[in-house]
Image (cartoon, rainbow, N blue to C red; front, side, top):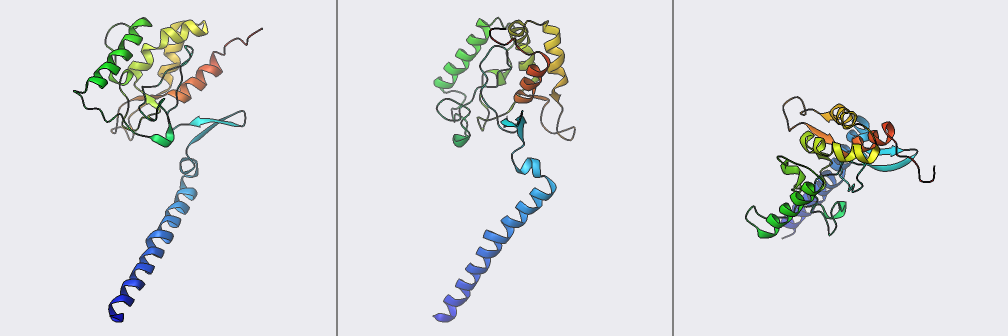
Length: 195
């Protein structure tokens, strides 16, 4: 009996050390050495304060900002500790109702024509930091009005922040909401209250 237990215990200890300790430490070390910014979450700091991550979406609701796609992560959306999609199928009445409400809200803002899918549907993680260039462009009029600038200037800034396909072939062109909103604040700052 001891001849069966001893190899099992030794194997378990060996693989625990190898796969539970050595491998994770090795991968973490390589990631920190080669890609430290990404390994630390691609955090974005402004004036010495972290304002977000390039990799995790966050809610923006004010009219002077690009709005992200809807989020099903957590009760109010964009909860990084509750990352998930809605898990509602395409024939689910709740999903159809939510999509219709999102489309109606955009129409109330004056959006006409075809509404891109990412404007009314959540991503699989609920934390997608990007939107399509089409959805970003639909928001240019609202942003321009709120910031008191020409819509063409907002469209040009958005176009300058379109990221191409990864390696030229993977994914779709996209706009990072946080980075574009920071660029909007830098280029077209809002007047401070009382000034």
